[in-house]
Length: 426
Image 1 (cartoon, rainbow, N blue to C red):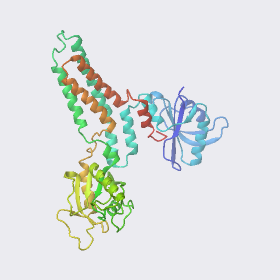
Image 2 (image 1 turned 90 degrees about the horizontal axis):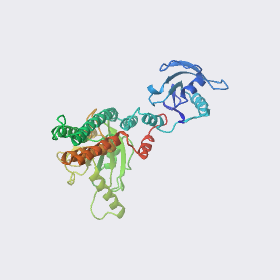
Image 3 (image 1 turned 120 degrees about the vertical axis):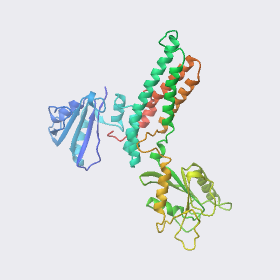
Image 4 (image 1 turned 180 degrees about the vertical axis):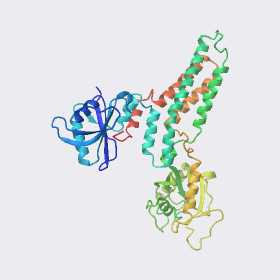
């Protein structure tokens, strides 16, 4: 028998209200034990909560319940809207925990039950996870747009089923007049699916949106990289010193600039032979980070960088220092006076926009992209395969990829890892 679970689903006390959710086969029995006769379903009602047995007054609270067919978890669900003090919450949770067959929920268990009972598919679960961890407006919009992927996948799945049915019919009944004798209709539907999937796969992914656009600050020792990163981050991220070569290792600072998530990376100063062994290791790491960066802020007005194109932003650092000749075409920036900081932020946000999905545009996670790419590849092989039997197998592989995407055929390890990222009350 499935346990009945409970958890605080609102913010940590003290707060104005503490919402405790209860889900499972004993949820309604539990509510009745606390408040007496059940109120009408889906209607918030003011009730007195008392401990079963002793009759001790616990709280005066709003309560509501949902039958399994209408609840978010797919099973009987109760919500207790308590006063948000720690003592009230502790008293109610202690009573719940003492009831037979009732226990505290594990992280993500409410959402897991919604998935298990068919209320959510895996794509919708991932969208909810992204929405809960969204810290920028762009992340929030992308998480909401991700909800639309489930509907899109269902459209593709139905089209694939129809395509598979046409192929099977062509195999079994190719001598009948109402079944196409050639692959014209089949190829047309296959081409439409391939194009639709290709358009989605061509869009920027969600990794940079949530993990941050990686910006590496590079240049010679003592060019002001650490000071500039501290100024942009608004806090002391890296040690600064007038002594050249202070930074020996890679230092990363997650920041939000202009509503976009960035990871600013401070690196060892780049210079040639003569540096000590530890500094040489730092320089090698810096060069690797430069190669992997989304954007590179080059802080050497005399040397030419290896980076080219839109990945490169060239600035004239320490523009406040007297006697420093400013090279033409470089953005003058000073971490001391603040000169050029606003312009640099605007340029970073502008370049980042080219790497991120457009507003409200569907952005795929790495896992989602892998499964859709498998589906796309299966369709491409289907169109290129003259043998109908082998072509039908390619379609089966494409359908399997979509089932893996939505969790129809997910593995337990994947599901455990995903749901563990949720908070207790979700």
